Length: 289
Image (cartoon, rainbow, N blue to C red; front, top):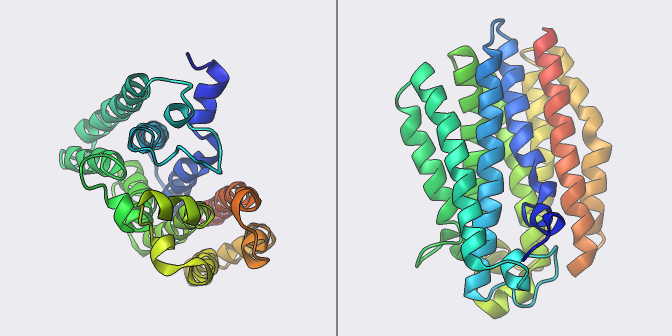
């Protein structure tokens, strides 16, 4: 049986900024226009946290039973390492999806019924990323899904439930967060190109190759800074988010210097910190104006 520490590792806490950052950005976009429902914002955070932990466990289960994690470079996987049974990890995944679904249902009842459909699509997207007979994560669509669900849906969804509206400010925040969130998966898949190629997992990094994947990572890291310039039309204080450039550069350094394998793990954590910092600074700038 896996220990509590191993279960925490299996939940991949380094990915939590991917859930927190879009909610923070959505709250900032809401506060820019005044009123906000804080209890709905808290529930939106609960949904995002539950879903990202759920998708991490689901990926652990699906990759483990497929044998993709048999020769892994990154952090420990519960099923692949044999620390936990596939059934228990699958149960943990659906427990998290259930918690997120209940919180989402409350939001839908209090806001708009069609949010139930959005939640259902999110759960399906989380499961079929590496689950099912033809997982789309094995066909190079993972980054698009992350940009969509943890960028556009999470940020604009938070803005909508918290303030009852969406606008171009929320969209700019969504693009910025979605780009950095996608870059986390890009560097993760860059690290795993050799093992994924051998196991038949054709990620976007495998399709692009090492050099072009590193270029894509740089473009995605630059995108939030471009969004900061765009948001300056709403408030000049949004330019303060440009101060996160050193954090983004720190995340880019291992990729820029040609690091491979375990040498890229530090970039994953640094990218998450940079994403959260950008979201917080941007949200504060929008809220103050």
